[in-house]
Amino acid sequence: MTNHKHLRVVLEDIYRNDNQLRRDLTYRLINEFRYSNLYIPAKRDNLTLNFIIYEDGGLRLTPLFTDKEEFNKFFKDTDDLELMENSFELYQNILMTTDLDGYILNPATEKYVFDKDFVLDIKNIPKTNFYSAQTYSKEEIREMKGSKNPGLEAFIENPNNIGDYEALFEELSKSTLLTLMVSAVDLSSKAEDGIVSLMDCGPVAQMYTDNVGGVYATIFSSEDKLKLVNTDMFRYSQVINLAMLVNFVLTEDMDGIVLNPDSDNVLIPRATLLRYSLGFERFANDEKLSNSIYYMFLL
Image (cartoon, rainbow, N blue to C red; front, side, top):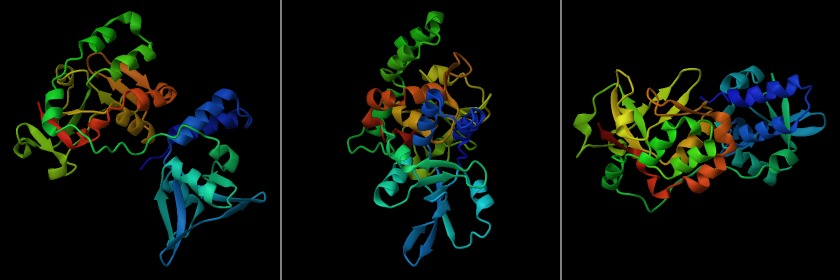
C-alpha cells in the first residue's frame, strides 16, 4: 500500500516554514499531489457510496488519507466504511460536481486543508491509462529487446554529461529500453519461442528494484548491461514504455530510477522525474508499447 512519504515530507517542510508556502514548496506540493493516489472513506447506503463530510472552520471537507494507518487513527469504528484509493483526477472531478469546499489530509495528524480553488487550479494532470488499440506484436517486441542503443551508452560513458538530465532524457526517448523482471521460480517451461506471456501465467515475476538509499526502478540500455546485475532470482528482460514507467514510479511513491545498475549506475532522482514528467508523456510515450508489460523474454 502506497504511504505517500514524499507528500508528507513536503508538508513537514511547510510546517517548518511556519506554514508559509514559498514558491519552491508550492511547486513540490503540487507535483506530489497531482501524482498521488490518496485514500477516501465512504459509507455504503444500499448501492450508493456517500463520502464522509468533515466540518472544520465553517468548511465542508472530505477527509483523505495517505495510508490505512492514518485512516484507522481517525476512524475508530470502521465497520460500515469503505476505503478507496483513487487518482488525483477523480478528486478534482468530485469537487467540480459537489458542494464540498475541499479536502483535509490525515485529520488525525497533519490536518492539512486543500481548498477547492487550490485543487481545481492544478493543471497538467498525469495520464492514468496508456491503453492503445494499435500495439506491437509479441514477436516484434522480442526483436526490439536486442537493441544496443550505442548513442545512449556513449552519452552516459562521457563524464562531461553527468547531471545534464535534459540531454539524457532526449537520449532515453530515442532508445529502446529494458527492465529486469525477476522470479523465485524458473519460468522457462512456460516460455513459447523464448517469450513468457504474463497474460497466460499471471503475475509470476516482479520488476527488479535497487533498494540502496530508497526504492528505485531500474532500466537498462541493453541485455548485456542487464546481465551484469547480481541476483539469486531467475531473470527475464522486458521492453518498456518509458512514459508508463515514469508515471508508475511517481504514482507508486518510489524514489527514482537507476539506469544500468551494477555497471553505469546513472541515478535519476524523483525530484528530477517530477520536474520533467510531462516531457516523458509527450516525447517518450511509444503507445504501441502499451502491451509490452505482458511479455518477458528468456535471457
